[in-house]
Length: 334
Image (cartoon, rainbow, N blue to C red; front, side, top):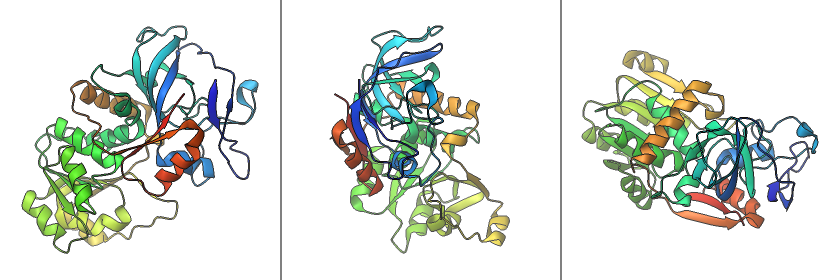
């Protein structure tokens, strides 16, 4: 098969596209013929050593030290390992965590991974939508719902035009939350947040951003899904209801947030930090279940701009994510 690979132990971590033996699924595993792979920030961060790699130990399986990148994809079931009876060969699916502690990531013609990470893709859902779910949608689902139901609660989602933020808007609306408010940095991004279902989109650069959010949620917001707490905490606290929860899901290794402790205490605010790769396994499965249910109900749509790259240009695809491409970056698998 044709696959993109890099060597985690190499000093430059360069990506290459080459022939590899097609892997066989073991017990409890599924082999998926990949059509489109989604690119996430953790792909380039893991490859370049900025964050800890999720690759297996060097030399595992006796086939050398390499990793196929990309956690998310859409494709069709190609083969089933022993004991897998929840899927059928030829079925359209979306996958997540393909490269998490697994050599056979999604940037290849075939990926082999545990069956629980392979979920049906409804007939009315495009491959583009399926490939863009995975890490962003599961992160959003966990941030929104790990603390319990959010029906009728006012929700603030910072970065509503990002992959996670956009999914969070759609999932919050599907869960019955309201109003669902997104912050953005431009009019164009506001349109993306509104297209996902936001009841309002507020430019956080504007001096009256807090007042505009408060106008939409006069009693304050109960849960905040935050993409950059070191930048946004002041605005978050200005619009938070008493006993609100702020969930932070993204940071760089050197990110530092200054906490106004007395203000947090006065408002009885809960701060919750998460990284999808380290959430407890039951919570991860619950996030996947939530995402799958919303997808089946038609609540998730491919509303973000798409940036498509052939597999031979996967390094450019990762660079596009690294430099802040607005929308979803996808890799086409031949």
